[in-house]
Image (cartoon, rainbow, N blue to C red):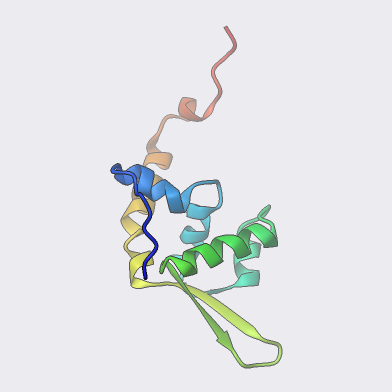
Length: 114
């Protein structure tokens, strides 16, 4: 039995169903560096709460973007990494980076009040 979800026709709207909010793409950016432990991700993303990071990683895992590997060690070790589907997001993040680096500084400054 599959859950039928009405998906938007627009690909951008579909993308935002998974990657909305300020942390989603930044988590992906960090995982593009290779497998990461939870603590490494927290350290690389100052300001993210453990709750938010956990929820995002669980969502990405449930949608096939990230795998979670738990090792039976003391202390326990859990590693997150991108799946093949997750790696297909590389050109998207590269394009976002390119735009951000090349956009004029004025694009990031609020307009003066009128």
